[in-house]
Amino acid sequence: MQQGLFKNQETVRTTVALPADLLQRSQKLIDGGQVANRNVLIVSALERLLVD
Image 1 (cartoon, one colour):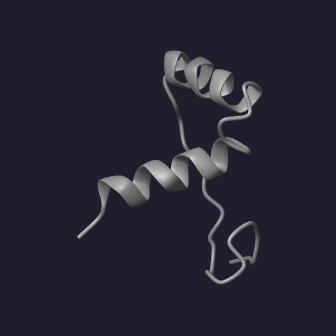
Image 2 (cartoon, helix red, strand yellow; image 1 turned 180 degrees about the horizontal axis):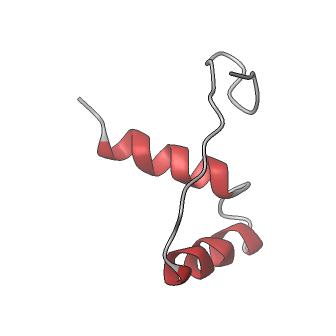
Image 3 (cartoon, one colour; image 1 turned 60 degrees about the horizontal axis):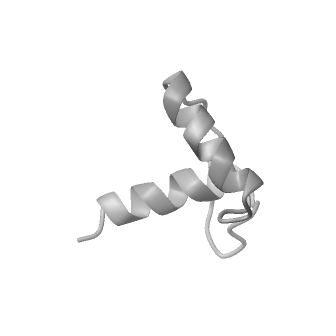
């Protein structure tokens, strides 16, 4: 468990296997400055999916 990007939240490091296409598409968002990094993108997507 570590404190990282999300200073007010406890975080846990994990490994995710992504399809190559999703990895490439996510990299375009990162390179274009739309998201800071892949971790932020994944957390945002999960939060949207898991909204109560």
